[in-house]
Length: 629
Image 1 (spheres, rainbow, N blue to C red):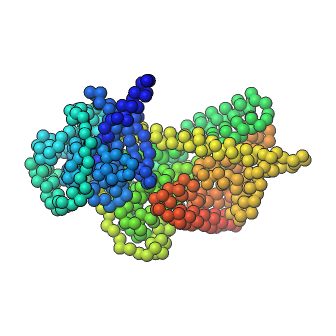
Image 2: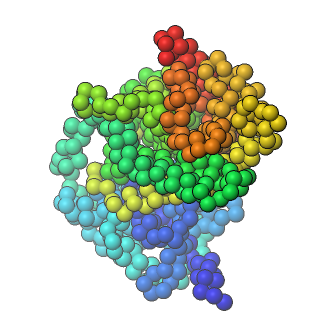
Image 3: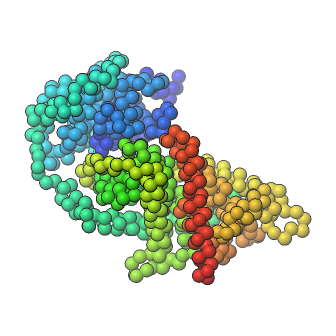
């Protein structure tokens, strides 16, 4: 038996540990610290809620499996996330074994809130370890916690950790080694939680804190001082707007050099392949299909990573919940709560995690409206299309000696999606029936410097996901599009390029009749079809279509200047507008169906977004023509 097989067997027999805790307690950072790269992300059976599972070996050589449960404030679940956490801990999920040990991670600076969950889990009679995380921050604030006394009061092992520091998990590993073999324990019925009222639970929390901590209260912390400015009703929204504006400026300014390097590399590869291969089907596949299509998408990786970098920094430092708080009043005016901000912000990366993140919204109507408008946030898959068209048609010059004109246009496109989402939410609020507005209940975590390790892991995961799509879905669609665009060949005496007579050309010309009123030619219509599978495929599709539409040495011409010379400004503006509202990719529609439990909502989303896209593009195209564009 090889080493790999032995490791796999040890892991399969290893006891399962469940990491449980409130949101923002450092639970996921501890999970990353324990497992490193030995983790996998999937979904719980039947739902699109992330299931992060990993494995590790303790210093004494004991193997463990570990499950990072969704954050929860109570086992009396109010959201789908909390329902999953409750069912896993209580052993109620079909086909899944209950954990052998629960590690309850608590924020040492906020025990008054965190200990309630620990006491609820304790009533189920499961083996537990209480993990006092962020003890370094607590000490800096003068909070003294007697871990031994806390352990006696709770009747469980208590350890101190600092999950963001190397070695900060060692006390937990020692405690696991000291436990010895873990025998399976069946949890008590969930009714055991209700044997003590919420008021009595909070009274017990206060009693424990009074004897195990110095119970420090009332001193103004650094977080409080920052919040006095960041959450100011006038200054706060200005700071948020400036941050968003600077992010979009950076997406263009910072990415210019690496994009040129990637573009030059793929151009050189294409020329090299074209120079060493004889003209024929195989050379056309490699140069016009693979290199032109895939290279045209990978070039936008720097811009996507820059956007993700800022989102991850704002999330890790604790600013995002503040942004939700600031926008609560504005979003309340259109029928949403500030809690919808984080799902909507997640949709700037991809609509799928944005739709999934809406499950944290307690009110069903607010959750549904948030899901329906999440795709109007400009996802990163649209960014390659925006970047291509902006580079081709918008001059790269400064405005006012400070701002980049291309960055300004990108900001306007993102802003148009946001405003449109608010309008759609307002309409849905009226048509679905106005309900009583729910007050925003949101924990504001303490500010802290973003952890570079977690930031690097987050960026690597995003890059890996993007490149995996390029290497699988996008490559497959690009090759398929090349085949449809290459066969059958042009008839004898043809006056148009061969693609004109291909299967793709026939489809494109048929669709052109529908899309001509908004300025789309048959080449654009061809690119829209594979773009339904993944938005960014549209750029690779245009690269393939226009490469096959040229002859001779023109094949190697860069796509942006080629479009600038063949399209009108009105067509470019119309296509930009189309992608602000474009119907969602099939993967997003599938997730909407799973999250809502109804096909009709996915169809409703596709229908209203297609209508918006067509109407807005028609107005922009016809107006631009009248103005001489």
